[in-house]
Image (cartoon, rainbow, N blue to C red; front, side):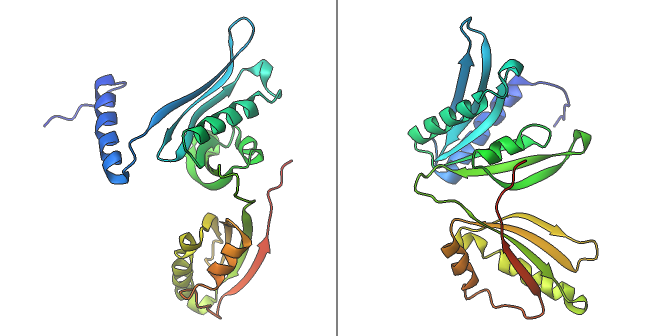
Length: 229
């Protein structure tokens, strides 16, 4: 067996795409993957902006979005996204995902109703890659968002953390998501940013039989909303 390291390898890329597509289809039962694009042009036929993405199994994804400099601030980016979402709906999608580097346009996606689900560290320049999700279901109301401030007992921090891990594992039962989890350096406090599809879903999470409160943990829960400058 020989291992070869190089640059662009079209043959390898095509083989990997073929093999992984077959694997993904078998694992998910979804075989309707398709490319998606939206193009904007001026009167001379020049490209003023556009996006590329994909749809697959009820999920739409945005790969790249760009607006020409002289068209920025005109609402073109929003029009491109709305067109992509509408096409995704036409194809049977009820949700969308997209990622944006922190120096690009994360606030743009937030204004369009996308909810941050996490981020990847290590992007050059001290930046992060921010991941977003949006429901395309017109019947879905605004998400119920919470900030939970937790203080753990110094003499039982390990037990308290283990309890929190068990409790957080119950979130998917009720449509909840842990968007961010922050911990202080001493390990005695955490901040959890949570989203639920509704307040009723949050109440069901609180009442889950698997969520017996640990009286040693002090928790302060705040309902929060996104703020844009």
